[in-house]
Structures are given as structure tokens and as C-alpha cells.
Image (cartoon, rainbow, N blue to C red):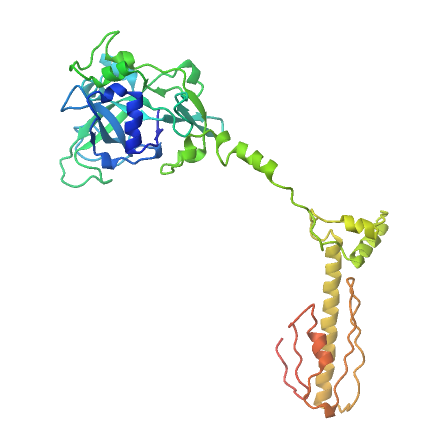
Length: 431
């Protein structure tokens, strides 16, 4: 079946392309276009229920063709109400038209309601065991065409016009009466059979187009070997290639949909060219070398594990020991040092609590006067700790701040974590 196709041309571009491909269609002037304003130009993803240009015989002048914007998905003229479910009439099997005994509604339309559908190519999905890969199929490029603007081809189709009994507008805003169309399909040619078991009937020659549109003398449907159905055959020599999967969603629209994946600006070829042109980023920046104490700690660790390594200042400049690929937490020297620092911080906070508790006891009844508090030695850290000597202020110092205590509890490594009440206050500060 044919469920999507591309026609990414504006109205004027379509006129120009039609004149280049079918110049005899313009012998008596430019064909008129009914409901031209309903055409959605630049559509790379025409889907069922959308409107697109269709060419049919002009009822006002049988020698000429005309363009009409129709809705894809044929609705017979005898329908009383707009269909609400999915349309299964976007395609029609050409074999059903060739067999007079097959019956069906297509026989009521094939006599005088034939049309052709211009397109730049169509989409088909190649079935794989676990996925479907969309492919775009089109005519080979000519010197006047490019990948972005492939040559026009023409699907053989049927159309009908319905006018509902109700005066209400069609739910999607379609005009009344409503013209709709279907695309005929046939067995694929040998060179495209790998893609799908059906393909649209494609017309490329003017004689086939003229006979299918029944231009000139009205002859209707003619049976036999040289009859009207002779044009309903497969077409060989098409080109097909994978395209982006985004085309599978109705409403998506992009010029990249008709470009091979390998040729896209964001495709494989572009990916590798960017990789080649992109400079390699240095793994290590200046200033990120380990400190001498970290190097020493690492040496101690290696010696404990039976690993001998000699790291000199010269090696340090070269970046030896750089941990670009960060190990898991707890495996690196930095993590061990961090754990040691956390334990030391806990001991410092504990010592601070004991000092503060002793101070509260003295303020409640003990008169120590000018007694000095013993030094509290902060444990040495692996990254270079420091000792803080805490001296209690005397009574003569008044309400002056105690710098030593302030510095102790407001260390640069843990700013603002703990506050100490002023001397003489028995109230507890919330921490």
C-alpha cells in the first residue's frame, strides 16, 4: 500500500514542475485550480485525511485537465454522513478494476472519475523482525533536479465528490461538496520487490496520462488488452533509500524526510566529519595537579600495597597520577582523605561541645576568675590541619568578642555551622 508521500512544492512551484514534466497539459494555457487556497505547500509528509492537489479532466473543457485540492481517502458520493473511524479507502487494488466480475464500488468510479496524483516520491516501511525502517522511493535524479527537489511522478487514482444531506459543516472544516481521492496500487517491479509486496501505479509518459484522464473525446472505461487498464502496471527503475523514522508520525514535516539518512546534515556522514574536525580536549587542566601531601599519601598507599613508584616534581609537571577516569567512591586516595577529614571534624565538634558544657557549669556557680582554659589541640588533618588555642577572656574584658573561640567555631572549612553564646548568658543557643 501507499500510506504516505511527499509533495513539498508551493502552488507556483507545482505549476512550474507540471509544465516541465507535462508541457502538453499547458497547450491551451495554464490549467485552472479549484480550491487552490486549501493546498498546504511544502508538505514532505502527506498523510490520509490531509488535502493535496489532484489533476483530473476539466468538466468545462474536456480537452484540458484541471487541478483540484482534494482530501486523501475516498468517500463515495452516496455516503449520508461523514465517516468518523479510520479510512480504508486511501488505496485501491488495480486488479479489482481489471476484473469486471470483482464488483465493488471502484467499478462505479473507474468510467469517468479517474485522476492522477502528483508527488515527488512515496514512503514505504521495510519490515524487520523487531522494527520497521521507512524508505523514500522516487524517480532517478535528472540534471535539472536534486535530492531536495526530486522530479515529479504521477500516481493513477480515482476520485469522487460527496455532498452530505446535513447542513452542518464537515468536522474537519472541509468544504461542501467534498472531493476525495484514492491511489491505485499494483504488484511491485522486481527491483523494488524487496521493500514491499505492493507499490502505487506510477504514470510518467504523456500518452498514459492523457488516456487515464480521458482527455479529448469521452470514451470512458475501455476493456481489453489495449484498453484503459493497460496503464495499470508496475514501474521499474525507481530509487529507494532509508529515511528518518520521524516521518512515521502524522503531523511531522521536515525537508530531511526525503534525504538519505547518510546524507542528512545531522546524519552519519556529518557525525564523522564533526569528529574529525573537532579538536581533542585535554584531559587535565593547569592547576589540577595533586598537592605534594596528596602525592605523599598516594606513595604511602602504594608502598603499603607493595607497589613501588617514584614521582618526582618533573613527573608531576607531566601530569602523572591524573585521575581523569574517576573511580568509584571509596577507591581513590582523595576519598580516603575525605573520610579521615570527616572523622576529624566530628572529634572537633565533640571537643567544642565539651568545652561549651564546661563553660556553662562554671557560669552556674564556679568562680574560676582569670583561670585559663587548657589548649584544645585539633587533630592534624591529612591535608594539613591546624591547632587552635582557646583562651577564656577575663572579667575585665567585658563584652568584648573572644576571637579565639570565634575562629574555632567559624573555621574556614566549616563556616557558620556553630555559634557560641556570649559570656554570662545561661541560655542555650539552638544549633
